[in-house]
Length: 239
Image 1 (tube, rainbow, N blue to C red):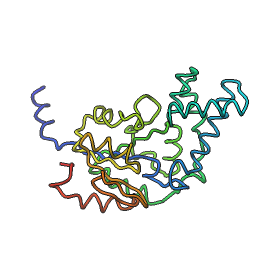
Image 2 (image 1 turned 45 degrees about the vertical axis):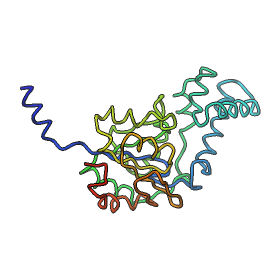
Image 3 (image 1 turned 120 degrees about the vertical axis):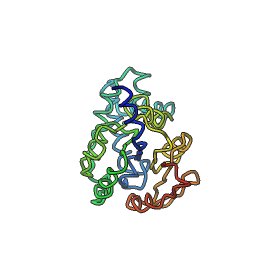
Image 4 (image 1 turned 90 degrees about the horizontal axis):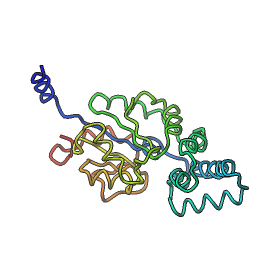
């Protein structure tokens, strides 16, 4: 029976996937970017309170610890707290990132209508350096909890876009060729460059900026269906 299975598998068309970033891609953050958004303010305020509670520090001491962690580890605060103070990163995520989405994300009713038809042709994948608790809150607000099924890659472990190792993990996990993937994101450094390096087709999404690295630039998710239809077969990585 083994030879029969092999023949059936070889006759199938190659899997195709669209890998979506979350924040700034599937929806717009109020403020325009994470660093200017209410989300970052909430995260940093919660992180400071978390440090004060877990390490029994006053507000000023907690603020100093957080600044030192940011100086050494950038946005990878959970990793810094784990390495420097032995604080469990999942305790950090579930406390600091369990933030209501109201007033933070710009909700659009069209997101679900855009994504649903794409499932007929593509495997839809979500990748974010945010933890699952925030991803879950956002997907619920956008009413797309069912769209990505189990194809959600969060930033809770040591595989993160900010560390440059998550796209390789995605193609390994899904057993898919990079040339059969489209990566879509609003950050050139973390969404476009690493995907492009692996051989994926890339779409940069941003209202005001353009990326010279991306294959295509669009201003919002609403342009995606039209953009996908226009992908030229000879130039596209999707075969």
